[in-house]
Image (cartoon, rainbow, N blue to C red):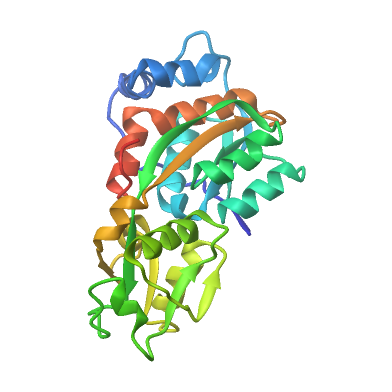
Length: 275
C-alpha cells in the first residue's frame, strides 16, 4: 500500500471576498442527510472549531483521482490542515484498520468490506453510501483484440486480468461473469483495481475488468468496452469516520465535503454514479 499527501491548490475558486462563504454554504447545504452525517464538524458551520492537523483517509484505489482533488480543496478551505491518503484494495485497508492502523476516515469500495470495520466496532456512527460504481472492460488503445463482450474474454490466447475475488472490483466481476454463465481463467488476480488496469496499460495483458471510473482516469491509455451484465453488478461505496481517529472534527468535515454538492460534482465528473 502507498501513502500520498497532496498539498497543491484546488484550481477552481471564485474570486472576491465572498468566495469562502459561497463554497462553505455549498458544502453544507447539499441535503439534510449530509448535515446529519457531518455533525459539528461540517465546513462552514459557525459553531465548528477551527480545524488543523493531519487528516488520515483510507480509501478504495478507485477513488484516488477524485479524492486527491477533494483533499486539495479541503486543505484550501481549512488552512492548517493536511490530508494524508492511503489508497488500496478495500479488503486490505479494512484489515489494516481492524489491526490498529491509525486512520480517521474509511471510504470502502463495497458494503462487504465496510462490514469488516463495523463488525469490529471501529466505525464511529453508521456508514453512508456516497457514490456507486459500474464495471467496464479495459482493452489496449484501439482495442486490437476486438473485444466487444464478456464472452470475448474467453478466447484462446487472450490475456485477461481480474481483481482478486476478495476485493470489491473482483467480487463485482465474478457476479457479472456468473450472470453471463461464463467461466474465465485470468492470467493474474490483482489486489486492487489500479493494479489490474496497470497490466493493460503496460501491455502485460490484453484486457481487464475494472471500473468505468478507472478507464476514464486512464485518459486514453486504455479503451473502455461496456457490457450489459455490469448493470447487475454495481458497487455501492460507503464512508465513515473511525472510532479511534485522531482528528474527529476534520474527519466529519471531510465526509461532509464528499457528500456535498461540490464533492458530488467532482465524483460525478470522474464517472461515479449517484448513490
